[in-house]
Each structure stands twice: as C-alpha cells, then as structure tokens.
Length: 74
Image (cartoon, rainbow, N blue to C red; front, side):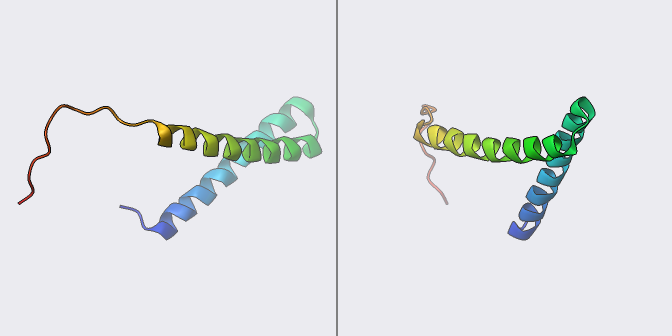
C-alpha cells in the first residue's frame, strides 16, 4: 500500500502530465500558447469539480446486499 506522501506525489505528477498533454494538444491545434495554458487550467478545474459531484452521487448509492451472511471473526 502506498503512503499518503507517495499518493500525493503520484497525484501531482499525474496532473503535471495531464496538463502538459492538454497544453500541447491545444497548442498544436491552435498555435496559441495562451489558449493552451487557459484550456489546460480550465479543464483541470472543471474536472476537479465534476469529480467531486461524481463522488458525492456515488456516496448516496448503497451497495446491494450479497445475500451471504457475515461470517463471525475468529
């Protein structure tokens, strides 16, 4: 299992890669570095907001019971 610090590092590195990809795709299509930076930032903020609401919706969904009774521990 990863430590919290490692998970945070992986999260930061993923967003650097992801934002870089968004920037370069936009730059390649438009030739504008300003638009590339803007779209990369807006996409990240939008994705973070949507992820939050996605998680809140899933938190309201109760898992179905499996029909298997709990086994006593020990």
